[in-house]
Image 1 (tube, protein in one colour):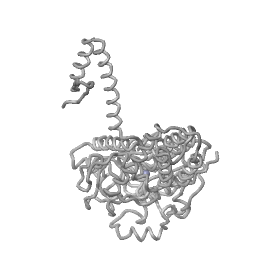
Image 2 (image 1 turned 180 degrees about the vertical axis):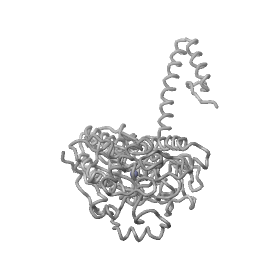
Image 3 (image 1 turned 135 degrees about the vertical axis):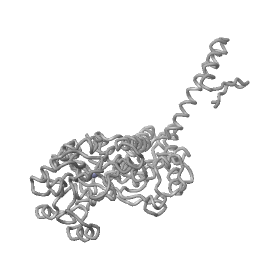
Image 4 (image 1 turned 45 degrees about the vertical axis):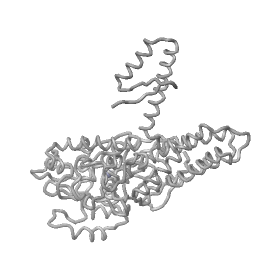
Length: 489
Ligand code: ZN
């Protein structure tokens, strides 16, 4: 299948034509959250970025197996090889079982990404559910001679690996750079070299998340789960591997080394990374007090927020920037995004009431082609949104009588919004308002039926409707110009 889609590949540092390994099936693996805290803005960007990739590839007619993992073991504090497990630490502080922490925050994460209208992945595997696969991988890497065991832990021998495979090709850091950056941080170490990293760690007596292995009780290194689970569900080499830019080093670099050390091949053909989010120009950080949870955005409960923002505003705002560009959050920027999005949504409503003319002064087909061109250019959502605003201008000008639309133009515009605004960008009407609108329409029907009953002097039915509504706290009032209703609290 020949596609026009170009994807920027972090590995080659350039845009490449996307050619799936198999004709019509695409495998995509995205590093998911470590579930030990509230879902925040940092989670929203990769979820939305790869949701767009998932939606667009499917729109192009490809079958996509989208795997996004849940990290529930092995991720140590400071992303290092020493220290406490992030989940175990939270469990200790809150006197919970580690799996209670995992369950609690996994549910919260799912709720938040669903509110952002991200489609669920095809498979969502957990690290703790794949300990056997990870142990098997460690065994193979040891057998292949690219790892060594010391005192119950197994480390990937980066120097040995680098003799056969270029280490650092994703991040562009060579071995000397890496050595320079890590040497100062390492104290007493059982590693042969500071650049080596754990693929299996011996569990100290107080470490509660532990499993038996050929090397004694321990737990997998953080990077290993993604290598084991991606090859299990997508094969040793698959199409797209994604994640946040902060994962390029060491996490994804380590994944490449593990896959080559185990399977003698790269795990993925295309590596995609979304850029990071700042708040009012500052990096997000717990110590800076600007760490805003998604729930706080939706309820407006954080001090830095002037008010609540609808999840669709957050989604639209994120999509207004290209995924490889940095993005700064502020109240002003969010409010501008909110206005922009309501202009788009209003135009889709206006379009329904437009009267077709005999002539056409616009070229919707050309506009549609521009939309595809934007998406095909490395998922350029800000350019796509600019073209959708051109569609808004056309709709509003037609309403004012400044443009002429034929019936087929109106149909094409409807299709354009359906395809790009709703299906590909995944934006939707505010669900609360939608619910209210529906209630209003249903109530209109009920009151109309009651009006008919009264006109027929069927007082039994008229009173029954009024009394049953009253049980639902809906009060019906009869006036000279018809009936009205109100919800009583
Ligand atoms: Zn990962």
